[in-house]
Length: 242
Ligand code: ZN
Image 1 (tube, rainbow, N blue to C red):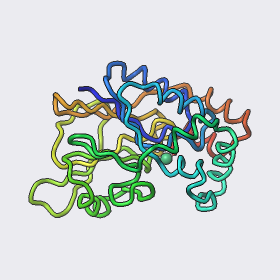
Image 2: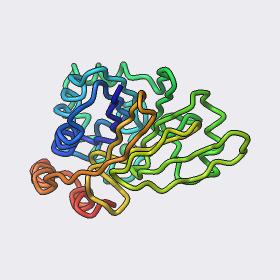
Image 3: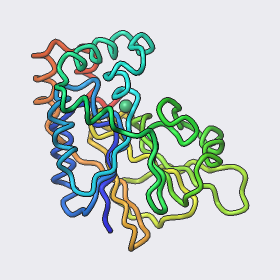
Image 4: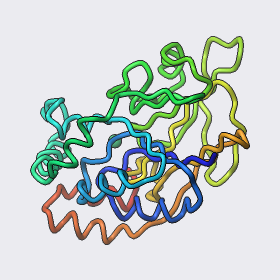
């Protein structure tokens, strides 16, 4: 089965639609949280995600904050402005969808968490020592995480006690190696100095996975953000990918 793995859409419908077109051929979708926050299209993105085939979706920290589960004071001032705007915009049906999202999902060989298996909503897996600690918190061969907006993978080979960090090359098929934690990067707000939308394809039959990048129409998103008076810093960062 070919599964599309997306994370950190952050209310960027243009990036999401571009990824869905580019991925083209998939039978199921796993969404790793942060559907909202930062971007101008929170309701539209949730509606689009709800329609996706075979959807598994977990909650991210921005989704939790938009529901009032996390104090927006724990975010930086600009993220807080975007979250307050998001709270005001979300319609009831979409609030209910977010409310029903679990923090983690185990599905066959795969475990899904927004931040990390150790602290699903908040922890950032940026380096191998932090990732190593998380390997003790799930038992499946593979795990997908998001949250950092930086595509990367961590491998813990049999008999090893420390994980290794692996830099990813876009559009290259990789064998699935047990055990691996994969971060597909962010659809709607990449932070690895590459502004293109990021996602992954997981192929459970071929036992491969691929990380991909695709260009999308950034100016159209920036125009909608300006119209809603969303913070200038968030508007500018999209075109540089930071
Ligand atoms: Zn995020």
